[in-house]
Amino acid sequence: MTLPVLVLAGSRDGENDVLAKLGQVSHKALLSVAGQPMLARVLDTIARTPGLGPVTISIENPDCIRDLAGDATILRSAPSPSESVAEAIARIGTPCLVTTADHALLRPEWIQEFLAKAQGCDLAAGVALRATVERDVPGTKRTYIHLSDMSFSGCNLFLINTPKGRNVIELWKRLQQNRKRPLRMALTLGIGTLLRAVTRTLNSTALYRRIRTLTGANARLVTLSDGRAAVDVDKPSDLTLAEKILARTTP
Image (cartoon, rainbow, N blue to C red; front, side, top):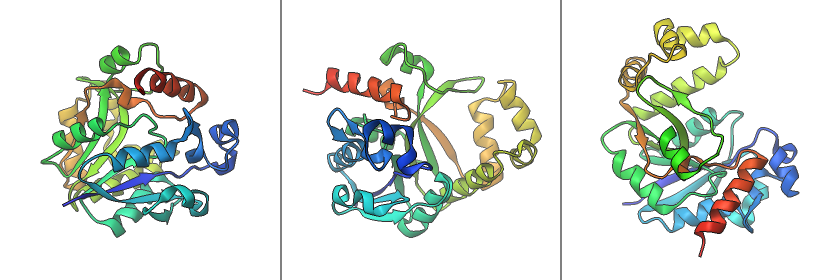
């Protein structure tokens, strides 16, 4: 059996995205990274990873990537990432691996490590610990989430392993809808959980427990051994960094 893959390629700003303008392309996903559109890099990595496929791409303008998509199915994305995932998974089903078009450094061994560690839960998210990122990408500035027992950066790899995992996506949708209403977010997560998060006294075990209470799903953070997995291309400095890394690692 093969594992379906969803690639999120949507951009809120379309051709007005900073990176699209920088690369003089019609969409961020088409930005050239070391001579190759970053969406093409992601699709190539998926193709070289055993056991993956078919591929679905979610983007707000399907026409702009048809020449790159190959045999992939293209869906029109929703206004937010959580809605795009929910709509796509409703068609694809579970299990499904989810990644993003801006994961230009994505490597087959990262995917394989993630999938091997992600078994036995309803939904898994790949992360890299801060110490690992700083070891492998010294000097980089990433966004970290701080729990009392770990600080980590996301790696844009998710496994929605069972139908219960879709409940976590629904929770994500609710949180995104209320991202400008802190009180509603607090009521959704629980005041106690939010306070512990703000004061950095929330640990991963308590977080998993709260998610299970809210969704009935067993969710896990899966730590990857290569800190470069946390580098995506989301701003001009990321493009410079990604191309430097590729220059060092590409034969």
